[in-house]
Length: 258
Image 1 (cartoon, rainbow, N blue to C red):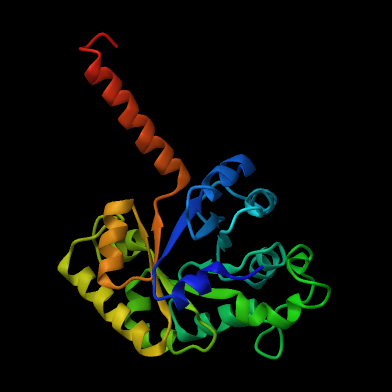
Image 2 (cartoon, rainbow, N blue to C red):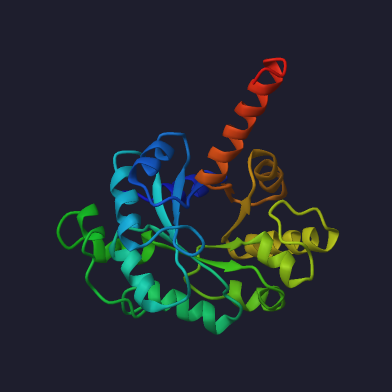
C-alpha cells in the first residue's frame, strides 16, 4: 500500500487530514469515505486504545486514505506497536529538543537508521512476504509536534534531525505555553510570526509543516500561509457542530414551536 500523504506532498498540494477521537470502526469507516487524504487515530487525547486503533485501521483499509496515529507520548513501546499495527505516519506530542526528536526517529525506524524491533504483525500484510521491512523506513512518516515555547526556541535543531518528514503544530498547547488562552485557530501576531518562521525553516529543509485546525476556515487560512497538512477538527467535533446547526435551524424555522 502506497503512502498517499507522500503522493499529495510530491504533487505540491496540502494534505487534508481527519482525526478520530471515537473508538469505533464504524465511525472510521464513515470518515474514510469523506474525501480525506489521511486519517489519524488520536491515542493521546482521543478515547482510543490500541485495539480500537486496529479496528479503525481495518475499517479504513478499503479506502484510499493513509492511516496515521498520534501516540500518547515519545516512548518506544507504543511507537513500535502502532507501526506494527499499520500506521503509516506517527505524530508524537511534546517534542521539545533535538535529543527528543532523535529518539523519536530512532523508535520509528528499523536498523541501521533506528532501533525499532522487527515484528510487523499487521503492517507486514501491506506488501508481499518480507517486503515491508525493506520499504518501511522510507514509507513511514515521523512527525514530531512542536507545541511549546521550548520547542520553538529549539526549532532549527529539531528540524535538522534526519528522518523527520514534517512537523505538526498543536496551537492550543503552543498558545498556552505563551500565556494565551488555549484554542486552535490563532490570530495573535506573535504566534503568526512563529508560524511564518516555521514554514520558512521547513521549506529550507524540504520537510512539511502541519497544523491542527477547528474546521475549513482555519484550514484554508493555514494552507494559504504555507502549511502542508491540515486537520479539520475531529469526528466528534464535526458531529457536534453539525448536530447543533441542525437543531438550531429546526427551532428557528419552526417559529418557536419546537
